Image 1: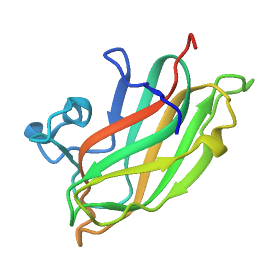
Image 2 (image 1 turned 120 degrees about the horizontal axis):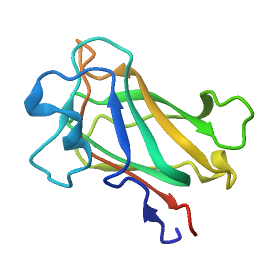
Image 3 (image 1 turned 180 degrees about the horizontal axis):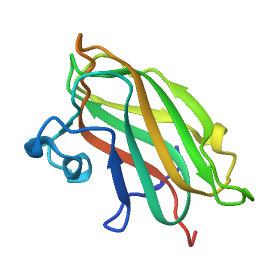
Length: 147
């Protein structure tokens, strides 16, 4: 795998479908701490939406869940910058395992070097009976705006 850069930075806007409470908010998704996490409220689907400050080309998604609270079926969507009328388009379907370790999903073949402005991960199913999802770390790696 090539060396990709992290595409999530301080200017990336993050939106989530729900948050269980303030202590497990969206800011914890990208803080790099193994002690903090985002936890959704119950019910599916849940989502994480990223709006990048400049166009990017994502290649890899890295997710670290809490076992027992894993989004086990996830649709990845994106808004491409070249589209005349920007709208969400299907990129890939990924199937995270119900484990605590970092999981890496290669989306390079789905993106085909096209630039996007936004990405959404939609967790359609959860390993939790109540549909909650807990993510300790989210990274999106790829090619930034000036590569």
